[in-house]
Image (tube, rainbow, N blue to C red; front, side):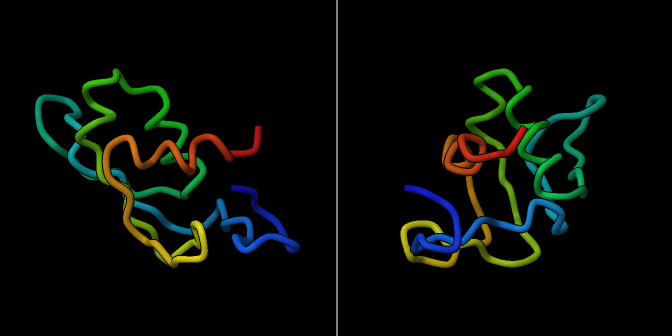
Length: 86
């Protein structure tokens, strides 16, 4: 899958609001609300077990294989992480 104007999947707006949930922080589970790019970077830095339970909710859907998605769970977030610009 590719992103971009010629692709079926336009590049996501990495600055849109996103929430990363179901990840323990400071002894509890706190949802982190930030931008999509930062949420994916945080997910990438998690231990594998925590990645599996994480939930990423987006302000607006992104196109993945022609389908609009605004929620990614566990290792499904990897679809975005692999395309995150440096």
